[in-house]
Picture (cartoon, rainbow, N blue to C red):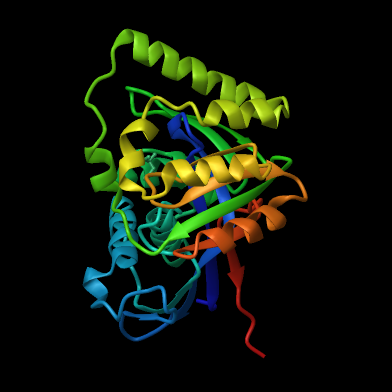
Amino acid sequence: MNDFSISIPASSANLGPGFDSLGLALNLYLTLHVTAADKWDIEHKSPLLPAKTPCEDHFIYQIAKQTAERHHKQLPPCKVVVTTDIPLARGLGSSASAVIAGIELANQVCGLSLSQEEKIQYGTDIEGHPDNIAAALLGGVVITALTADNQINWIHLDDLNVDVIVYIPDFELKTEQAREVLPENLSREQSTAASAISNLVVAALLSGDYKLAGKMMEKDLFHEPYRAELIPGYHDIKLEAKNNGAYGTVISGAGPTMISFAPKGEGSGIANHMQRILTDYQVSALTIDQEGSQVRQVHIK
Ligand code: HSE
């Protein structure tokens, strides 16, 4: 086996009302360097990652093992060095990127020849929703639907003509906790209005009407009204970003990070302004990753 690396982008899910359906990939990356070895070893080389975890308890290893077992294979021992610039439990898809890492690791070392459909299916079986998984795998922007028969259909777009700004607070919020505050049911009136808003976001994004997209992104009824209270400064960040030219600002995934779309060329200026005000947040102008998960052979000289 030749040494190889796998890199997987961060992702932002929902984009407001596209709850569990819309996702986009961002240019922060989880990277694995994989080498054949006598026994399994996973090393962390990033300040964002916890101290070393025993291999059998490591999330990426467990996903890889589970993926291999689905195909009646055993993982050959490897040394894996993990680096990342995706902050954990912040709503930037760190767990989806780790799931894709595990699936791709098994795919490579066991020669599974998995299709993109299989990877999205396996990842969604683990995460429960395809939004981050599809974005992390495919890059760009994805519109997904997981239907009652457990099928996943999607449309993939390479890019949007917008700048992206993220506001990353200095605390974690687990997705399970952010899902617990959501109501079990919505009335017919609520769900009709919520899906109409979502329809319009997608139509506006596809037709390049980003002003309308941003306006409707901020009108979500599926999750934002319930999660807002988990994010200090939620309303102020939205207002300040809008006053400074952003199209719209929403919770990234389950939060606590928030994300704005802004006119192309204005992202850095808005990010600089917002950083001066939001001293407790890391504010960054990011771009939409268009490549998704990548496997590269490492050539040793
Ligand atoms: N769509 C998911 C949610 C993304 O909002 O809960 C986070 O996993």
